[in-house]
Each structure stands twice: as C-alpha cells, then as structure tokens.
Length: 419
Length: 166
Ligand code: SF4
Image (tube, rainbow over all chains, first blue to last red; front, side, top):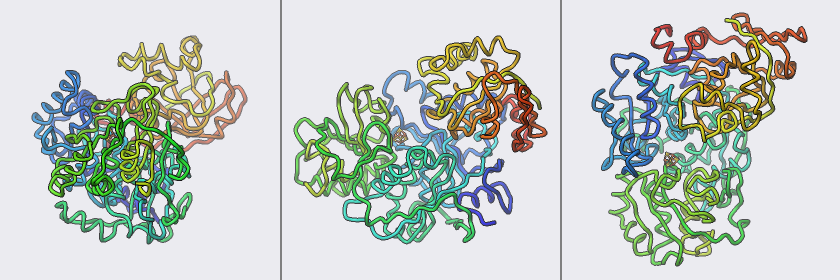
C-alpha cells in the first residue's frame, strides 16, 4: 500500500521500505531544537542519560527567544543554563541576543531545516518546517533530552488528512486567512494525531512565507505535523538559504488518507479568529464593530519580510489610530535588516508604531506588550487562549498582517479595503 | 508485563489542567503532585487509589488534552495508577506517558466494556485487557518491543541509562 509524504520521511529515517499508520518506530533525527523555556528542563533531564557527549554538536539548535533579551532575573538564569551547556558541549547552533530570532523563523532562514528532514523540537510550533517538506513536530522535554543524547526519537506513524488547494487566493488573502479558514472548518481537534498534507495546483500561488505560516498553525488543529509538497519555490528558497540539496518525498498515488478536503482558495475571505480558540473564526465582513487597544505584527506565524511588506503598504503615509498601541516585531535579525533596507521600518515609525528587536515577547504574554484587564488586541500570532497575551480578562483576535495593519489605522478590526 | 486493579472511570476530554492544576506546577515533587491529582474533577481520587490494591484508570476520548506538561502523567503514575485505558489520547500526553513509564492503552471497546469499580487485568505481552468482574476480554495491539522496554525500565531516560534500547 502507498505511503503519505510524512510516512515516507519516517520510513527513510528508520531504514525501512515501508511504515504503516499506527505503528511505532524509532527514527534518526536531523535536528533537535529547544528554546530558553524548554531547554533548561531538558538539560536537567539530559544528565540522566549519562551520555558522554551529545549525538552531534551540529544537529542541535538552541534559540534564546521567548524571554530574551532577558526580561527578568529568572529569565536571565534560564538563558545562562543553556549558554553554558552550549559552550560545554560545543553546540554550534546556539543563538543568543544579537543573532537570534524567533526559532521557527530562524531555523528555515539559516538553512538548518529543509525538505526531507526529520526534526523534533521542544516547542509545539516546531511543525512550521513542514512548509519546506520536512517532517517536524513538537515534543516534551524528555524527548528533547533523549534526542540530544542519542539522535533518535520514537514516533507513532500518523495517518493523514489531504488538503487539495485549488485556484488563486483573492487580493488580501494570505496563508494566515487560509489556515484560519481551515481550522474554523475542522476545529481545534480536527486533525488530532494526524498529518495535514497540503497539495494541489493552488500551491503555486502561495509564497514560502504563506506556507510557513500555514504549517506553523497545524498544531492549532491538533495535528502532529503539517507538510507541503515540495515545488520550485521550495527549491529556490532552500538554495537561497544555503541548503546543499533538496530531498523530495512525494505521496504515493495510492496513499491512503483519512479524509480529503478541497479548498477553493479563490473563495477564502480574510478571516479573524475570535477569543478564545483559533477555531472561533469569522470572515472580515462578519466581525462587526470591535474596538482595539493594541496591534501586534510579529511572531513565528507572521513576523517575516512579506508580512511587513504587506503591512507597510497599507500603513504608508497614514497614522495609527490615536490610543491604539502598535508593535512591529521582525522575527529575525535578517528580516529586521531587510525591512530596514527596504524602508519599511521608516514607514512604521512615521505611522506611530513601535519597532522591536526580535523576540517572542507578547505572543505568549511574556513581555514587550502585555494586555491589561479588559483590553483587546489584534495579533498576527497563532493562539488566542484565555490570558495568552496578559490578563485573563483580556482578548486576542488572530488575523493576517493585512487585517492587523488596517485595524491599527482604524482603531477597530477592519478590512484593508476600508483603509 | 501484567498489571491489574480496580477501574476508576471518567468521561471525555479530561485535560491536563484537571489532571494536575497549573497552581501546583511550581513543584516537581511526585508525591505532592500525586496528592492533587484529579482534585478539580474528583476529590476522592487520591484516597480511592490509595485504598485499592492497584488502580486502572479508564476514560473516553481525547484524554490528556491541553498543555504539554509532563507533570500530568507523572502525577497519575505517582498516585499509584498502573495503567490508563482510553478511547484515545491527546498526542503529547501519549508521548509523555510512555516517556515517563506510564503504560497507556487505546481501546474504545475496552472502555465501553468496563464500568467504574470493575476488576481489570492487562496482559501486555499477549495484548489482552480482561474485565474480571464481567468475564469479558478485549484484544489490544501489543506495544513494539522497544516501547515495552521503555515502560518496563520506568521511562525513556531510565531505559537509556540501563542501555536497553537497541
Ligand atoms: S512566537 Fe509565539 S508561538 Fe512562536 S515560538 Fe514564540 S511564543 Fe511560541
């Protein structure tokens, strides 16, 4: 019987011809990731493995992004644990302030993850790299510790839902609108345990930034991973980011899927997820009058160059609404630099936005823009759970960079067409 | 490997916040975690487990959903539960349970055929769940040998230390 893209990658990494959904396999890893929140726990656990050295000092990535630049003394201590571990073990891919970025934006940009790779990370949004045709998934701290020691992890081979994307999306519709539309349709458990595999001729209209954003939110539908079929855009991206080879695993024609869902991209409208679940979606024409106090454009979901290009095009020559605080957070140093060179940051600052160094910051209610009781934010991030950006009685509305930028100008949730 | 005990049964979507509320996450002390296990749903849980000669937890769909905290399976294991049988588990909970050495079984048939208070026996090697009280048997897919080795060793890192994973 045929295999899905995800199953083929797993099979290749456990040296087998074939794996079947539901089987449990031990597989070889191409990269193990941790951040300043999860790595300190895993480092403590790692000691228990009594491993004389990490499995490969070039295949572990440690990124200080959640509470960095250090928000307080506790955060500083956490980063210090990781910094010392990285030095002691000779870990080459340790990214600290000055070169770090939000992990899931940084790793693809550095060419550390790519098509055909098998990646685990102690962070639920590790599924982002599926945009490049990798099998990547979030795990717990014990898995990370074991992965660092042995270079392997066990997996239950997932079954899959196939999403066939058709046609070309409309003007203001980005990857974010498409994935919110899908989560609204199948629900936050709609893809539990499963792979979400994206294919179809509509793919050619989606940029790599769109795809990274969509794969990033696969976990918000409960999926184990999200994965895109590799095409010329993937290959171009990989070449531009220093990957030597593109490994392509295509699903077999007779691969078995639990469900196949067709999405007509031309019918998707700009979509907003209302509090407090990513599945509470409304299209932009259904939102009504929602006044806002803050806008955040950034994160591993939508903090990439294209996101800022779209936002800047909408904000150019305009001022943000009085009383609305607008935070622009490029996800990596490279994106920051490109946005600077292209004059985007000037547009944002002229409009009255605050521009920040890369960090997760407000996305998880860490720092750099926490909400008070009763406040509302439109954010290009991926989760709007209770208290996610601050007070338990604050609210987060998830949207695309275009809708976020339009809302910043209007002071309420708005369509870019209104601006 | 065999386990047996009295069934304690719950419904669908038992989340990690119910298993171990976030207010107790400032400790990793297993005994303390165990003493608060399930308390927001069922205050009698710790005493029932303590007084029984072995406990098998039984639940519906999506057991362990919510955050990825490893404290949740730890609390269940430390409370004295020898096995959890559910219709299905949230993904990271499933991994974390195996990794800390808590045996878990997915079997909608077994869940349907076990009531609260029934005596249950699980034979992992043969892949059989037996409801002793009702004299019923359910077949389960056996774990592959290396997952059995993880659970028998008491968790993933213990297995690595004992060098039993090949
Ligand atoms: S930006 Fe947000 S979702 Fe992404 S890694 Fe950071 S905290 Fe997690």
